[in-house]
Length: 244
Image (tube, rainbow, N blue to C red; front, side, top):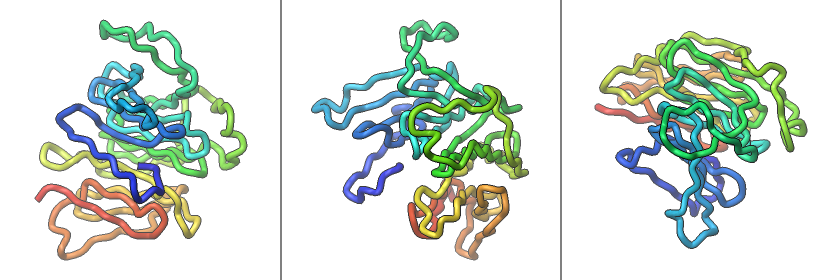
């Protein structure tokens, strides 16, 4: 959750089909679900069960990231083997879906096509996106460091994105281990943009925005794969856990 408010905690039960949750514009919460939908809830409304849905894929969206420099822009990772950028201000008719519903979709300025499904996409403050999936790679897309270019509209140089850096990483977690997901540290106090991702050999790996490994962490007490891991928003502290 991209929030610094220690009084706000939001949770999600897996059995209701949500796959990821983030804060969006203002007092909105964004979320994605197993059927490829994106939804938002306005916390200022009295009825938090009132949700607005959009269709972003016909298959599961495993996770998504919000652009810290423009929170109306998101990147999604999907079972349909794509990582896509969407502009949530620009709704349009959805004429490609196989579902018999009337949800709109968003304009897609750019996308990346992967060989296999994509599990997560995470966006950081220097406009880098990291994603990983089942093709045993972690990919970093450096989209430009000047935040001023992202305040209103952003069009990538090419609609078909190409990764700036590609790292080999065992991302096939199998049946009994949660899906591995790379996530950026939100507000690094040391100004080093870095992300963490679990390793199937029971390590947590930390990389910078240029793909350099900063840490390869383990401990005798770490007896299982720390599949779900994340940074403290500002400090260089990590938490990770998984099934025994």
